[in-house]
Image 1 (cartoon, rainbow, N blue to C red):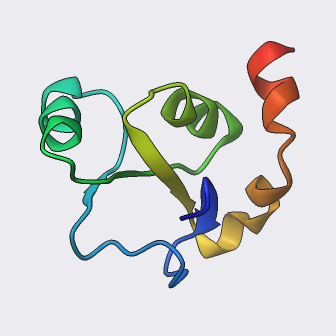
Image 2: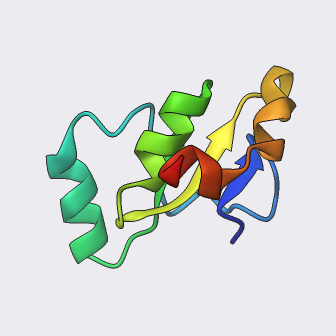
Length: 81
């Protein structure tokens, strides 16, 4: 499963995953992770991508089709400056 993909990408199976719009509510994310269920987060900005990928429970981040530019983010620079 890719770390970052466009929503709808078949490489990120969402049928059995917990798909959330943010990492704001940690309880369902922690519960899914503990149960072995993948956690997928939707993000539409560099800040949202960084916040989602900072959570170890998150398996993948999905960006909207119109924000394909987010696939080109330098995740190392975004994380560590």
